[in-house]
Amino acid sequence: MNTEAVKKDIDAIAGERWFPKESYFGDDIEIYWGKWGVCSEVDDLKSVLMYRPGKEVEKFNANEVRFSDEPIDVELMRKQHDNLAQIYRNHNIEVYYVEQQREDRPNAVFCRDLMFMTPEGAIITRPGMSARRGEERYIAEALSKLGVPILRTINGDGIFEGANAMWVNRKTVVLSTSSRTNKSGYEQVKYELEKMGVDNIIPMQIPYSNIHIDGIMNMASEEIVMIHASQVPYDVCDALKKCGCKILEAPSTTEVRSTFGCNFVALKPGLIVMPEGNPRSQELLENNGIKVITVDVSEIMKGKGAIHCVTAFLKRGQ
Image 1 (cartoon, rainbow, N blue to C red):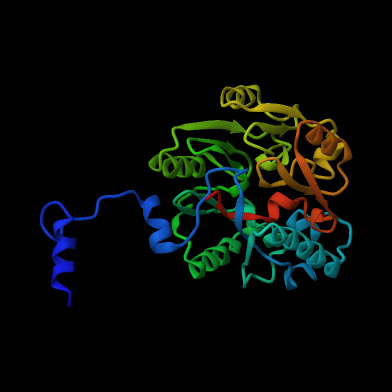
Image 2 (cartoon, rainbow, N blue to C red):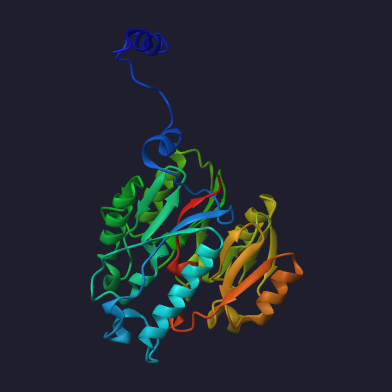
């Protein structure tokens, strides 16, 4: 044993040898856990967690799980999911997969709802719909295998889904209630965020006709936010403007509600991948300096979700 090295290590710590190492958990993640953490919707995307559709989409009752009545082409759905994953890989984004899932949960493809990533690790959610309960267990299993810290699992009477929170910057999060997030779930997430230094929680009530933030509002760059104007409260828009954001009003209700024009993912600031079939929304974004990649996710959209819904962020930024 190098006694001199041991002595230097002891001398470097004020006080006695067994005093605690006083530091922030966020400072430890890369040292002890890995390169994980998110505090932005637009910083360079480094890694994501997805679930490729499995047996659960081969046979189910659409009315029981909030899917479209239209039949699903299962192999095409899988191919479209693969195509999106390949776009991520083409941009040097690591794609990880949830390896196991219940065979009675066709909504499990929508990973965003099952976790919310923070700078210090993941919050495991508790879905509002009974037809989705239990999916989150397998998200937790996948995160554990990867070494992603799990900060909390929503508990008690709490309900929270990951798409009911949106990062604006390191200090600011839009946090919403809806039929998928109740007051208890909201407060549990708020508590965790405030512990890690988020001091600007923008509260948002999702209108009755919607369930998640990413169906009516999304960030394309650090300054550009596109919204479905009739569904986003004034106070939320005002708070975003005070954060330096420019609000773009989606030009087509049909594109927002039917072809998921707001449900895109930023690969980096000013570069997004969005569902094919939203020409007016795409033009508006491009006219405001946003580069747009489109991809066909029409079969996935029969589950009433799109690109942002199927993508759980694990790491953004450096």
